[in-house]
Length: 441
Image (cartoon, rainbow, N blue to C red):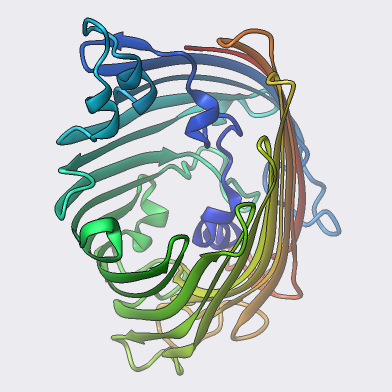
């Protein structure tokens, strides 16, 4: 179970969403006009293979592989885009003024569901869900505001340490509001925001990790060249755990602070750079869990290269820290790169890779003193790489394939408390492959 807890803690790096659905520009086809809205329905069916369904360390426990069937349906909706407004659909002779001026309200939303059937463990078959809403009022004006909500239900990961009837389903919801002020020409911009986030585990054994988050953010941007700006951002993240306190590890309420200053600018029309640095700290309510406070610097450097109109390469490094369901927090030092190209307007190829070091805070039992593993802390090297390709026969029909590798390398070992006290290695290697067809409009 604790392996799954660690995986869930850094789940943003372990996204299993389809390559085409995680990028809205890939999921949308020509669209269906309904009044002032565009509808983009779609359906995809894929067969896949997972080499390590339960994240086992195959040096001590044989890895269980499985074939997988995944069926996904989605419906995306948005107010009409600039291209359709410029074409003047529904108005005699078109409306060029409406193409140059954004409407007073814009809207984007969508819902998708993915059903998974695991051939080697049919009892694990389950449904993932995602839904999102984003509303902008008076976009492009001096004063504007945004409302958003994102909902998701995930069903993975699994581990070999629990009865297979146990559910790893987790519900997440993020509701936010943004207030924006911008001067004429968008030279100076200020954005203040608040997000209310929920993490809820459906299974009783994981509900110690249920929490609310209150995230307050402030960002100021000053553009002193046409494509170059100095920015500052500050975020305060308040953690409030509301689950039972008898879980496998101790989690504490806390306050996470992050503040950065940076530069975001274009050197040429095809090459731009983002550079930011700042300070981060974490303060936790329980003083009996060793020294669980965190203090360090944060940084990000990213280069973006538009090689051709249809080919882009981004690469960079980031150092950050995030809340975790084990050890209260984890710090990451990570390098990453992603490449995307479209060939002949029909074949899309995307490659992503990252390698980083993830260091957790003290991982202890609820008594606040006893280490859960062979050492007080835990450090992982993680390598993640994926290749996505899609060939579009028409603007509504495509065949896609995805290959992904995830590896965790660590000498940390958990002491699992039942039925005796065995050592559970925390490292693993995992390959996934998918092949499917989808229709989208």
